[in-house]
Length: 317
Ligand code: ASP
Image 1 (tube, rainbow, N blue to C red):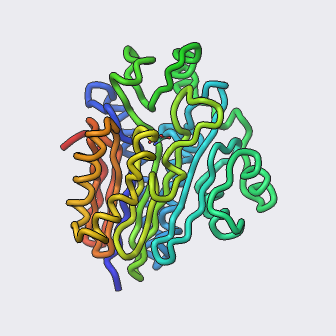
Image 2: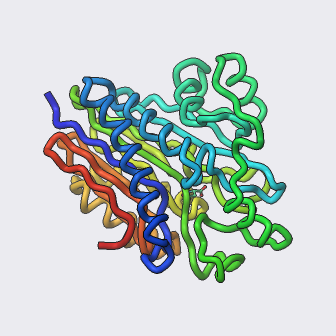
């Protein structure tokens, strides 16, 4: 019987205490705790790491505070296009969806693609058509409308800027100065010692039509392999894609014998920093070790384990 562990994130970036009111901070903490509880109850009931990841991410996708599912940001065209992926560490199966619209829980569609499409990634209308054929829940445009996200977009829609999530008001439209990232993710280790990872995002405000980030790309934003680790990333996707971040952590463990902590440190605090890639990741291994590793000011995050840990946090320690 394995130790059980669930780690989650709700995005990383320039998240400073001065930027959140106590009420908003409490809402974020509650959202994170609810997601931890949803995923952990699956693990406690001897469920699989994959089902725990789905339960935790669904909860975050349904919460409009986070940039995924319901709270997704707006693209340059003023619509919501979402990316999501899951990966099963026990067999290296993966499923992902890119640039999809009107799907209530893109993470559920990613799992469906893994299990029933015969492919790994489906995008846009093809993904939507597959979702319809499988009875995946749809939602109208209004469901994805949140005033906060809409206003974020209105501020920069006439510029060429694209913006990472939760930017400070006075810095809107200055993507290289102050950055915050949305996106949600979960990694889990179940009672049978298997791991899974999942990530879901609305991407970046004012992103170009058809832009795909790192989140739905196995090996970049999402990766799981029982031989090494399970990882979900959040940050400036263009850099995470080029650095193949999640797989790089796994490779450092597999080929160089680094510990989870060492591998995360090298990739997030050294390699990504050198490249200029801001953000972070959550990671676990089969021993139940976990890392919340980020090179930004903060990361919405949570951890719950069978050793009794049950914490959520936002800012740098
Ligand atoms: N990595 C995501 C993307 O580039 C954004 C994020 O993590 O907030 O689409």
